[in-house]
Image (tube, rainbow, N blue to C red; front, side, top):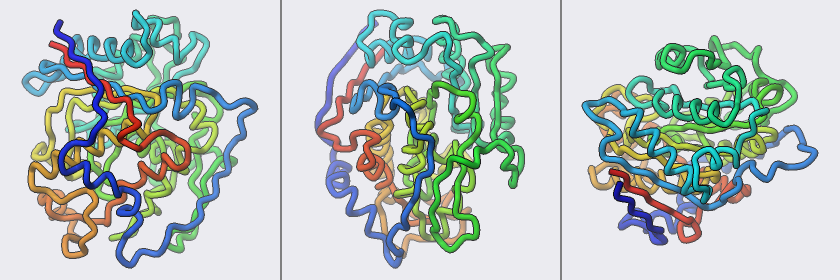
Amino acid sequence: MNRRHFVRSSCLGTAGLLFKSAVSIGENVPSRSGPPIVTVHGHLPGKPSPSGIPGLYPGRVVEVFHSRAIERNRVSQPVVGRMLEQGMKELTGESSAAAAWRKFVDPSDVVGIKINSSGAPRCCSSPEIVREVIHALRAIGVPEHNVVVYDRYSHEIDMGSYQTLLPVGTRVMGIEHGALDASRYDLSVYCDANFFGEWETRSYIARLITEELTKIINVPTMKDHCASGVTGCLKNLGFGSFNNVARAHQQPYTFTDPFIGYLCSTEPLRSKTVLHIMDGLRELWHGGPIPRSMDFVLEAKTLFLGTDPVAIDSIELEAIEEKRLAEGALSLWDQDPKNLTTDSEEFLRNSRKNTYYRQPGHIAGAGKLGLGIFDRKQIDYRQIQLT
């Protein structure tokens, strides 16, 4: 195995110029009123968990690449297993994978694995990665019935066939079973904000999080998003754990900044989320969150690991922005009304069109809430290349 490990401390090319003014660009949306007040009604932890966001290693991002992670459009589970093991050891400084996992999870924990099934089968949390996470948890003594793989929508989990692709005994759970199903949400924990005069101004958290899970491992995908700019650790966790979040969008405007950050700051979600493993095996650089074709999907063959979702998402944002600029697509920061379309099909076909004034500034906004480090110069970015 040839291993290359180094730390980068500067932005890449043109993308770096954009990041220097990230917050000011994200706030400067034509004709959009200022963001409303968001009120968080969460459970106050008796003693905040030191392992919760931004976690044990704030600002640290480990990227692992393997050229054979995907071959003939199939993810190699043995290769992914090696990538995950090396990434966990690099993140924690431990000499064994088991010791690394024990930094985050005890055998007595009930562990939720928050996947992103939206976009299956083209671009979703790869079952191969989820299987390796489950194997690692079982190897350190977590019982099979104490592992719950979950996402917000049951029908998207079904489309990804996760029930049949994960190890026997794993619980696979969708929070919502229909458009108006609120039966699995905790009405005592919510974020309240009036974005566009909607009649219901609250978004409630899943009872699975408040009542059962003791630890959460977040497994998002690496993809762009028509409203928030990217779907990363923050959006996957926030929008995937609360209901009634689409109300933050009303074409062409969106309040994903600051909404996503407030959702992720809500207790107990913040304290229980201890690890983020971003699936960058396939990178969706346009047409997200649900791609209609593979035209904008790049086989990046990469994993990103860390405890700081802001730092990971800032690296993801940089990578997708760089790819878009290389392909001649609009910048994720584009605010030109001439580039807007109300035709979603045109947006899905044309990377020079937007349906919203995107809000990638939600990542920096989450950093302001104490959820992690956005400043690129302060991020401990470690890259590993396996062969």
